[in-house]
Figure (cartoon, protein in one colour):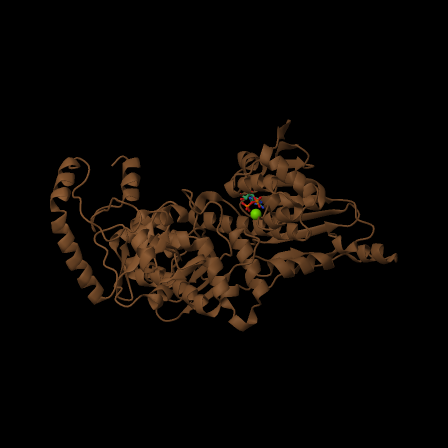
Length: 572
Ligand code: ADP
Ligand code: MG
């Protein structure tokens, strides 16, 4: 078979250069990435075999093997999972499909100093390529389940890779690393030592649900280490990981670190999550959930096709990624695992969408996430502030779609306010500061804080010292339209209808005054209304201005100018 040589795509090349020059101080993580990929491949095979009887794959002993060779200085991670076809190898291994990674690389280039770069780097898992941190050549041999021919991929990570079709290859994938020459001063990085491998697997991959096996060093290896002679008989492989599902273990048995490793495996995010949420539902429909709120929003959160991060298991068996039926779209940033006892292993996405039990789970999980955020607000305001900064914008989408939880969402929301230049306020805090006689919670929407503050609508409110919320997210234009209430008070735009600030007595006085003046100026106003009839409904005296001579106001139930623009842009 001919050997083809390919060039890595530009982004892939950049990433590889970084790996070769070892940007991560902790190189051990390469093994976590390889084991994680192997585990995914086993999950996929089990699922495919379940759905397709004719696949003809052997699923009797699915596992991961790790093999080291001290003399050759190689390390191999092998799985008998789904494998890859020739085209899949080119596509999956030769390019960076993940848009988040591409964006990361751009940002990294722009990072001004090494500290900024370091911070960025820590945020991204780089998967398979991390092998090049420790290896100067990587060979991947793979055969997709159900296909007869295999594919061998080899690269030193320097610009090109070669691909060759091979007639016989075991089903699944093996990745062999030719380890870089050892640093004389650093035996910590001896990845041919079974002791070292065992330690890394325990630390990063203990929860993997497939056995990760390794044959212990042969006596000959020990002898090579110690210089003594010994027999070379192979030893029985041992399983390195406990394979215990974290969500099935009791809470005090699992450390934060273990939870975080699972989070990384699921989310491909290298930063520890902001919050870990556990839920055990007993009774007729039993399930366990282990959910994570990440500590930063992913780059593609607002892109089309963003995948929700809930994995569905049925009795410990992985069923699917991105199970959208379990989480509302506005909580799509939540990652985790849900393990249900009484679902069929054959369950499909379509069935899930209609299943009543699943709908109940969906409701319960959404409520649980919201109540966790609420608890975070009082228990750890700083953490809550991070949460809101990262996810507030997406959470507010729920105000449009999830009426059942609207109060709960408003309850955990924060908004920029005229009360404080820097710190946002919650509605609860706003209400506590409300003036005597103030009936509504006032807000104004606009493009930026500055644009809103310069609006003439703000004048009367500023003069009277009435606090106004400054809403600048596009989604704000939409949800406020329903004039939701908080604590019995309506959210009201300062740009709409009459403004009635002040106490009852003041309001009455102002009304009489306006009445009198309205008569006094009746002729002028009628004339102006007539002259401007093409563009405005009515010209009237206003109590909202203190400096500007005039402003344009909407009726209470009219759309705001910004929303008008938005609809116009949409061609409506
Ligand atoms: P990620 O795991 O985040 O997708 P990786 O760089 O780790 O990124 O892997 C890229 C892709 O290559 C995987 O998504 C998978 O499709 C494929 N892949 C990697 N390792 C294996 C493997 N052992 N078996 C099958 N496919 C694999
Ligand atoms: Mg991976």
